[in-house]
Image 1: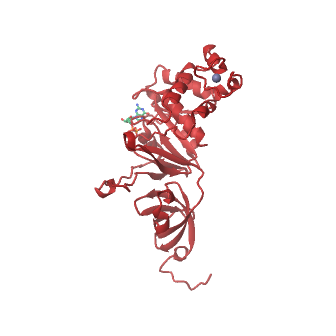
Image 2: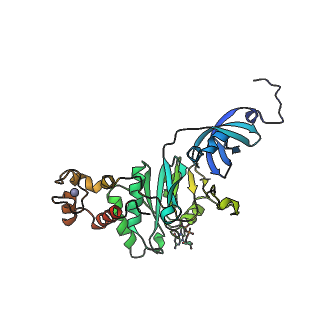
Image 3: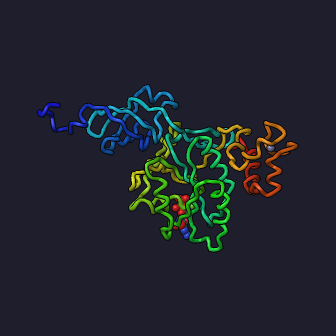
Length: 316
Ligand code: GDP
Ligand code: ZN
């Protein structure tokens, strides 16, 4: 490289190509964090990428981009996605699936010991979805400072006994925050759980000075190409979290009813002994899974949640 370069623009920014990760997207711009030095680039979406909804970059996408000016670039390529998360948008018959982030490695299922009350059905639903998407689930029991009688911890023991990772935290006292930070290290995670369980408080406990970014809602942005408030947040230890305000529930739409049971690890030792090999473990005669529930070898709570998942499958 010549010593006599034009130094009005730093050499790295002059005409190279870089790789990075999409940290947010507005209607026609993506914010991309460069892998090289973590600098931020506003990247315009090229016409071709922009035209098809499916081709739009998602938050979390790994991209190759061309530097077009200081802090500016153009996305050239989206690298193949490892995972894609969807959520429901719209109401009633207009409900549809909307893809909103890519390459998430870990879903942190956040529940509160109390206020709002613990709902294991939600945990089971999110566990099924995460496993179907090949995303590592972690259950975070927050507000343990309120679990004086240990009731919530007792309920969650079912999950740790099944081999799921369960972390107990209190955003209030700081308990367990280090363990949570460890789980989030060097990966892209998303927090999921009901409003009020403490997702924002946990981010604040993890990131000194955390302030949620918000975008003013204009009339225009409510239209067809309304932008979703999805941002990447960087943790002090290098992990990344997808931050979306409010409750973001995943659905089990992508999972066929006959496959739901395969994401219940405790069913597996019995399912092979059911009379019918396509047994859904509901009313079928000779169902070894149901017999195991009756003998107390499978948690009744988990089984009831399974039946509910089957029942509500595919329903908005
Ligand atoms: P989000 O809706 O999931 O983002 O929940 P927030 O972070 O807004 O928290 C909801 C409420 O729960 C707030 O009043 C918090 O102060 C409170 N909260 C959050 N974490 C804890 C905790 O660990 N213990 C207790 N006692 N309260 C908490
Ligand atoms: Zn069966």
